[in-house]
Image (tube, rainbow, N blue to C red; front, side):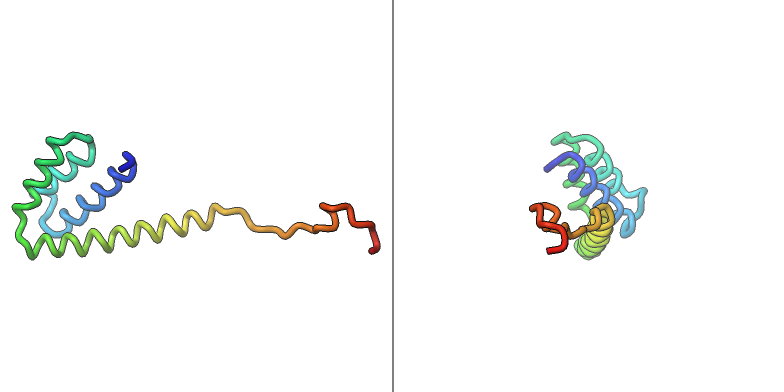
Length: 102
């Protein structure tokens, strides 16, 4: 996974965890730390802390994370559309040297 995608994914997951269990929860801290540094031990710690969250809260976190990801994708798509230049049709006669007045 590219580094920027990894960081964004962990940011979305961290935000979803914070929404459900709060920023003082160790699972939130572990997810944020795992997102900052690509380290297998940090990933294992985040996974371990996340598994300690109740199943109902994990389901809510999943729902929140999916919603946040959809919003993020829509925002990125809108920004991408705005950056595209306007399409202008070319006068093919000018391109191929059509005689004037024909």
